[in-house]
Amino acid sequence: MTGSSANACRKAHPKGEKGGRSRSSHARPISTANNGGSEEEDKDGGVAFLVNKSGFPIDGHTWERMWGHVAKVHPSGREVVETIRNAAHLAKPSVPSVPNYKASMTIPEWLQAIQNYMKMLQYNHTGTQFFEIRKSRPLSGLMESAKEMTRESLPIKCLEAVILGIYLTNGQPSVERFPISFKSHFSGSNFHHVVLGIYFNGRYGSLGMSRRSELMDKPLIYRTLSDLIFEFEESYKRYLHSVKKVKIGLYVPHEPHSFQPIEWRQLVLNVSKMMRSEIRKELEKYARDMRMKILKPASAHSPVKQRSRGKSLSPRRRQASPQRRACRRDKSQKLSPIRLTDVFRPAVLDKKGGDLSTLNEVGYQLRI
Image 1 (tube, rainbow, N blue to C red):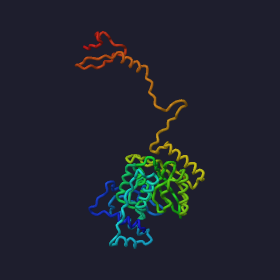
Image 2 (image 1 turned 90 degrees about the vertical axis):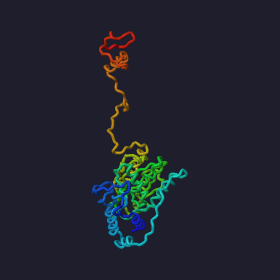
Image 3 (image 1 turned 180 degrees about the horizontal axis):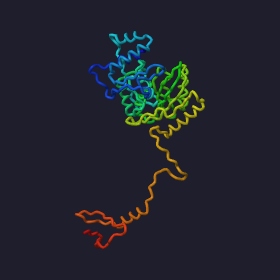
Image 4 (image 1 turned 30 degrees about the vertical axis):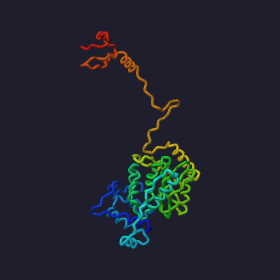
């Protein structure tokens, strides 16, 4: 097990008899449904994908399950587990400070500070994701999970890094963020990965975490979205992975209290069956639509109105019927106050023409 996993195991203490839970975590039953790679039974690359659903402090079941998984997959097996758990003294893990944006910083410098913070948290090699990320959850709830990441300072995986990157860039409205997901194939198994795409001042880049340094952050130097995607594809080839699918979501709102969920897969490209020119064409069209902000989440789609030639789709006031127009004239011409218990109220005469014999010389109607 790497040094990062050792730090994770020292930091995440099991819950005792009187242990409490964090403010934003609640116990939930284990589900086998696929919910964006965050369920107990999911597998990635043929390896079980475990998730801590007990909150913090971690409960005993999740704690023992994590160590059992480490003993199965680590080359040293049970030996490394016993060495760490039975050690009399363990070095205290460092707790990195959350970066703060300064007015003197440029956007590339700020993005680099965020990426450096993620690297100091380290990649989680324990096989158990410490923070449950449900992709269908509203943005406001995911931002609470990001706050919990900064409090606990535990190693993170790629999906957690995307949520943390969104949280730390919320204060920069000029920086557009969108998720980019990859499905790759290697040695008979499929692997999934996600990074946070960045668009600023006509250039593309990314933030993220991975076991491989070339599959996480990319600097803001790519002129087009296709250039960024092709760079990731080349990085995958260096590790003998072939990219099968690329999924790109929509821009994430900068409002941290939004109840709108993140759109993770607005565009899906089966790149293994497409020509490079076709991929570039689709990506550039999609990038242009995103910049113009004419794309909407699938949940916000409404029926499309068919516009007739020469007619506007803007709402118009309905033309009043002749009977209603006549009624308005009657009201404007024949309204008069009524004296009733010292309160004056307008009285509408009969539409056929009221009897004017009851009107006195000053225009008041006398009701008997």
